Image (tube, rainbow, N blue to C red; front, side):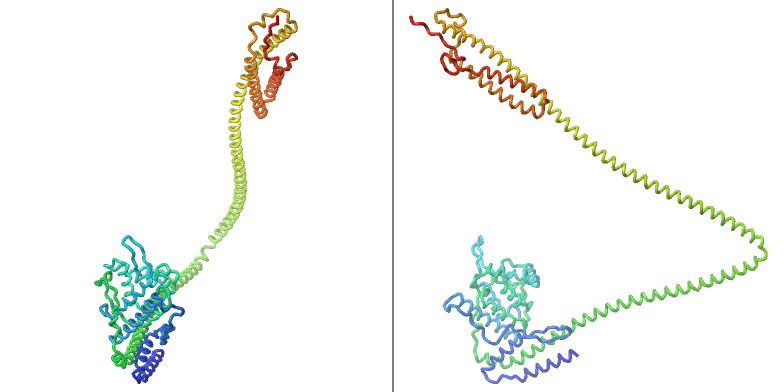
Amino acid sequence: MPQCDMNSRLRRLTRKQESEAPTPTTDKITQAARETIYLCNFRVSVDGEWLCLRELNDISLTPDPEPAHEDPKDPIAIERLNLMNMAKLSIKGLIESALNLGRTLDSDYAPLQQFFVVMEHCLKHGLKSKKTFLGQNKSFWGPLELVEKLTPEAGEITASVKDLPGLKTPLGRGRAWLRLALMQKKLSDYMKTIINQKDLLSEFYEPNALMMEEEGAVIAGLLVGLNVIDANLCMKGEDLDSQVGVIDFSMYLKDGAHSSKSTEGDGQITAILDQKNYVEELNRHLSASVNNLQAKVDALEKSNTKLTEELAVANNRIISLQEELERVKEESSYVVESSRKASRADGTANGQVLGETRKQLKEETQLRLDVEKELEVQIGMKQEMELSMKMLEKDICEKHDALVELRQQLNEMRTLNHELSIKSHSSEAGAKQKSDIISRLEEKTNQMGSIIKQLESRWLLEQELRKWRENPGGHIPEALLGKTPPQRDMGQHVEDIRRELESVKKENDTLRTALEEKSSPSSSLTLSHEDERDQSLCKDTDPTICPMCENQDSLTTPKVPQARKL
């Protein structure tokens, strides 16, 4: 039923195309363009199990609007417009020539080569140059590599280009990529994908490049018409790296009369080719559906064979079980009959034996009861043993936990004893140091005692000198002659003694603080006693004011007697 509907649609389409015959010369060109665009404006799609024609709105018959707000004298805008017009002419000429030649083109076909040259110029327009060691280089292979990231289907083309032998430059790879995309009939889709990603193209193109403006989108829309062309291009022996990309404008300068004459039969050719492509697509779809149905039939046949095999196995199993059931029934009936015959024959002769067997049965039953009671007793004992074992296990676990805790406490005590031993060693070392310091202090106190004795002797000398001054006519004591040191040496000696006393006080203070922290009360008492003694000594050694000269430290300074005036 769907195939009949599609055939009726195809017939109506052919009748409509045959009825639309071009009348004037001016309408022939527009009619050819309409038929060409009509060919490019439909594609075959699948909706479920139906084939239908869907309209593509990528190409319109109206002329493309000019970009607004552009300076007509801008050379870059003029270049973009010229490249767009050249792309239109090359695509149109390529489609017309393909229709005339049967839509199969080779790599040696001149319009196809010019189309690739025009596309190369369009992709190179506004391309940023990369600085290398050999100079500046412009290559459109970088933007084409983006298609692989945006469209996974393009990965096959990129891999094929990289695997081609003889391609050494990025320019050759880009040319090969364009040819493979045209053969795949996805060139327009790939170009639309690139143009829609302006943020990625900004890395390769200037802001006013053709790919960044509206002209790029127009060219991508025009490329949809090339999907009706079957290109057969061989690139193994072709040198794509060293080709010169120059546009040949002579191919697009044609006579108008010739073009008007040639467009008369284009309508019928395009209609026939449309029907041919439609039938091919229909056959392709039908062959695919046939393959799918054949695969389903094969799968069903395999499952059917498996089910038949399983059914045969089940039937054999049922038959064997039935035979075994019949055999068991026969054996059981034979056993029952034999037991009945034996019981009838032995019933009269074995009466006594039956009584004895009954007695034995009673004895055995009694014995069994006794054994069961004993077994119950044993079971109770066993349960008690199990309970006691569980209690013992629980007790053992508790003791084990207690033992673990005791071990932990023992380890803690060991660590504490170790720390205490370390502290005791350190305290012993501190005590030794303190004993050394105390011995040094005792030596210093002895020295201070000798110094005090010297000061006392000097004080006595001062007393005698004072008496002599009170009695000037008296005799000078011999102790005053030759024993009184000079006044300067005596003052310096006193200053040294004071400094030494201050250092001893500081040491006493440090020792007092240390002993308050670590030492015993007895040592602190001894140190305090020594400090009091040092303070008393310091108080005793403090100089006083002499009543004779009324000068400080005059008692510690020797005074030289003055000679009387005669």
